[in-house]
Image 1: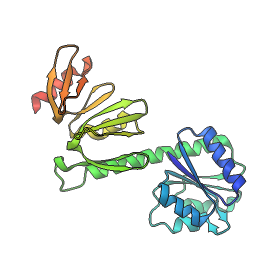
Image 2: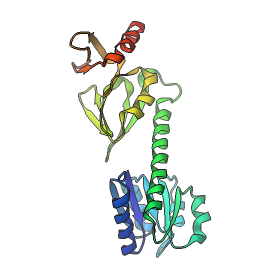
Image 3: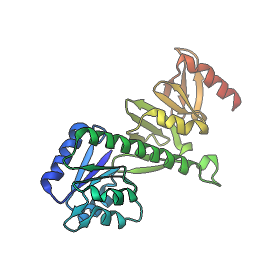
Image 4: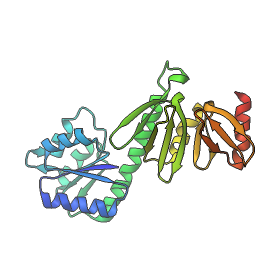
Length: 246
């Protein structure tokens, strides 16, 4: 996840960054801003998943900054020495409110809550795009987010997805590959209703792209474009049943 830390005091800002780096491994990128104006600029530049913001800053408050946005697409964690702002903070749907000096355990728990909300939002965005009304199955789309690029792809153009730890590689018709930092299980849940099959621990395929199923050598499918993908023993019957129904 990408994070943005906003505080007009440099030493505090850098302390927060150090704590995040030490205790929140799910955050892989941390940007900084020193107030409302620069905070808004950074938000538009990097599209963060989480924003840690102070309340009182030289050019306004964290609430002033958030009120200038037409939509808050990230999780908000307020960091301040003043508990009196807690109620106002939660009016902006803040995921948490941390007081200075920051307790590392509290910080880690706040980020875990934010992470779950980010995952839920991402899942709902995927489903919303794919379930737009009046769109045929061939026009259904999925949103894939790389670090600096957001791809909107038609499902019919996806050949397969390959798991690699916490990452998933998508193989596209034009031989292009897109790597996203989410595990394959998340995409299995989203794509299965649209004819995608988990035929192996590391592969989820678009069954409509199968050219042939070879039962020899343990079993493998040949996809459009020639890619060969192994079929696990326990998934052979599932695949055969699907092919019979086409």
